[in-house]
Image (tube, one colour):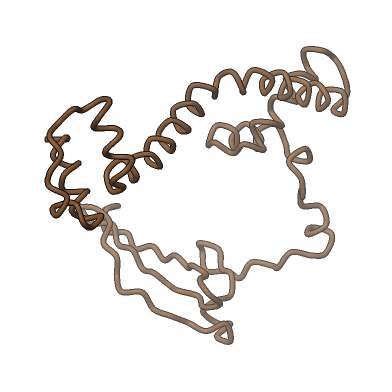
Length: 190
């Protein structure tokens, strides 16, 4: 008798042309990972696909490969719903198309055109919704660009001080470099 929590499982991952085999063991405290073992593609004995019973699984034929869905509209309703619920945007779009088809009793192409029109209608109000954000970004960029001359340029800082701040101007010998001007104007902040 072996309890469930000591069951060993093997997973194979493909990364950068190498196959990595990772052995996981479920313990009462959780999942414990054994060290990963790298294997090359040439080692077919380890890489060959096996079922859980250890039997070799047949490789897919050309017909099976051609029958595999290539586009979202070829998938079944269950697959589309599962992918849409996990957040796949293409599956969400396909699910919306199928809902329109069922509601409006129309073809896939007509339902697709309806979704395109819906997207255009949604985007028509987007400019007004984004306007406050764009104004704030433009204001922040303008303030950043204006702050450098206000702090480090003597003539701009002197005019700003004369009209708005009205503090005492230091001696001309204390304002010879742009760093000294910055030290004087930085005092306004404090």
